[in-house]
Length: 118
Picture 1 (cartoon, rainbow, N blue to C red):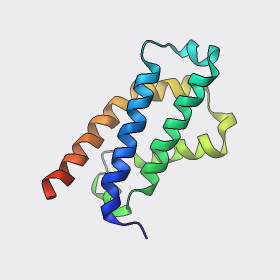
Picture 2 (cartoon, helix red, strand yellow):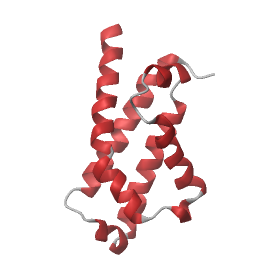
Picture 3 (cartoon, one colour):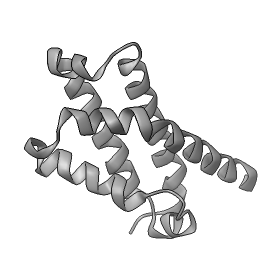
Picture 4 (cartoon, rainbow, N blue to C red):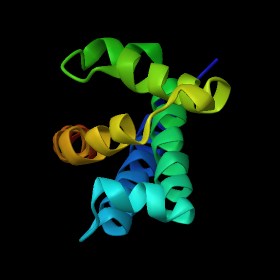
């Protein structure tokens, strides 16, 4: 059974992975993913971590925060791990460019909720 106390730690893991993705992709283009395999794999691994940490959040936490597309985030992780051959570099780039900043803002807000409970 997952413990509620672990949710803040998982959220921190999500933030760290988002920050790595943003740092690694800064100044890069989608074409760089095709030309630089280590960049692609670094980004894919951190997206995977975001999905795994999201999966490990308690069901109660995820239910209390339906604004975040937890099922989509977790599904992306499953595809990266089990269907890695199905992920296009364009799709990965789209997630990095369009989804990570809004997710970062949401997770930061959720962490503040835990700070306010302390």
